[in-house]
Image (cartoon, rainbow, N blue to C red):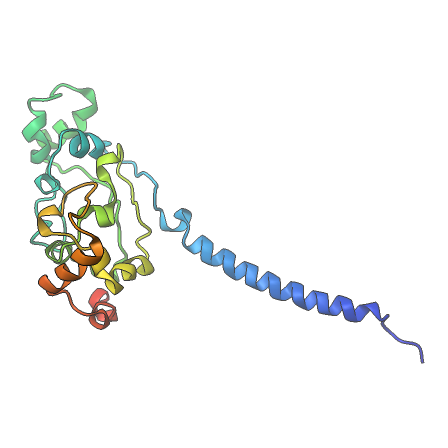
Length: 219
């Protein structure tokens, strides 16, 4: 009886299996890359705001302390969005007739807050407390990036869980003295490998088992 399939069919079947495995692996890799991409995480994308506030000008140029506007960052879970009165403190005198700042003046005049668009918007199932991180020596720059170089505010990190865990697993790589929390372009006075572990002990930062427990961030 003659063969139904030629001998070359064996080679083709093996090649097809190898190709299928390669395709599955490639699709898995592509999904991992896409899941971490700026397109999915919205990192490095500017948000349209009622007034395009420049941190580069106010922080980098003028040197305004982060806590002047985000006044509750050291005592509250939320860093706080400044009320219009904070803007008017300066802009009743400076650029007080600029058409660009009319939304600010209208907000103050009509007693209606500006509707700012949140840039760092964590999911509802994630608990994040600014005051705890500040108290433990995590600088603004660590999470928000070099805001003093941002003409428009953007999300500089992915905000994905693996990004948070990088710090929670090894806080000694990131902590700094508390008096340097708002410093942009911070450089440690001594090697971070020496300074970090000492600050972890001094600030009483919990061990990695506690820091990576689900209940720390998901409550």
